[in-house]
Length: 277
Image (cartoon, rainbow, N blue to C red; front, side, top):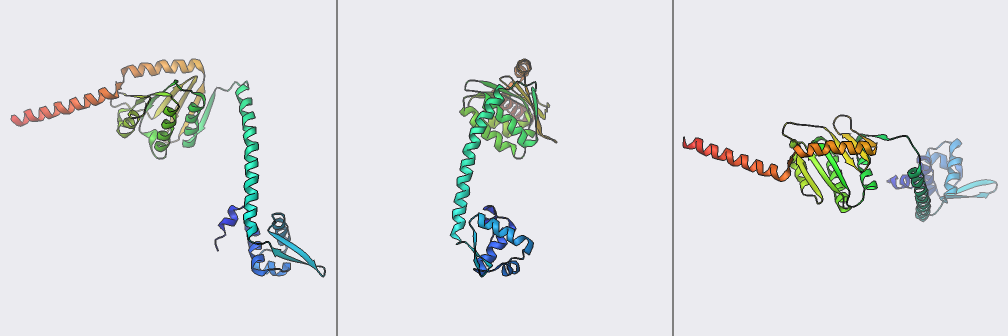
């Protein structure tokens, strides 16, 4: 029998063994339960009490001897419903607490202006902050994107993130390494509320910057992955100036496509001329 559903219900291995022993034995004293379940005498009474508290076992006394019995198996479904109701109540209470904690956190006076988010999940957590503090019509910059941020599990996340980003009406400027154009840059070109440019060929930057509102995020997803989130308006303004400078010397996506097409035509013409010779 697969006992995993009982584990998912929250029963310990000892409780499962004793409960199944009771199911098989019917009404019985503790001795057969010990033999059937393999649980020691010193532990079996404690487990029987826990099962009784959960409504999964009961006992009666006959001639000064305790006899134990498993509750009807349908009780397992009732117990599951009770746990679901309890979890729902906990969820509602926790939601109320989260609202209060958010309010306290927003009004707290703190000298901390930087946070480090570790690992790929940390990179996602740092990126999620943009959607928490930005609103429709705002603009963000993502500068220095190589292929590495999109390796492995990150590519599906970024695609899903940007769907939520432009769904919220936030404009994004991407500055990619040339080597990341296919397919990542071209994918970003297809997103609404997006503008893509490419750095000169040969430049590879595994670290990238995200600039939005009063925040600068510096991230890397090569080797040890992490993001540093710095909240400071003057710094954000400065990094935006750097971003605008890099943007001014970068090649727009459509011009890069035209340039590539022109190079292909020139190469073809040179090949034809060589053939004539």
